[in-house]
Length: 118
Figure (cartoon, rainbow, N blue to C red):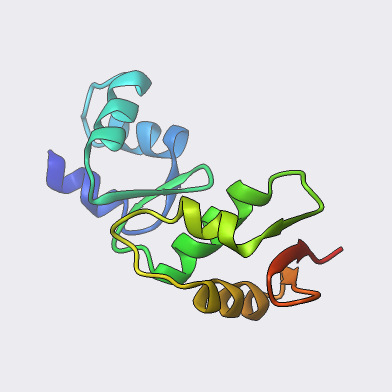
């Protein structure tokens, strides 16, 4: 049955979509059980409110950390983002700046801080 879960997650799905689809396939887990499985399996990625299998890119990791770090603040120092990068992700202040600027979501007035594009 685990292989069927992975097959379903080749295309990103919300918890509700996955629970419904697995029910149609005969898996009688409730939503809490599906959610627990998703949270325990390190090969399953959660991006926003969707789950999928695969490998998340460094770029996506950096953008997610920037978004979490900046939150509702008008701007943040790049060094704050660097402090929140997971230990298993290799990134420098220069790489963070480049990824942020290339995303089109952020600007940097001086190369040391990031600001959301309005």
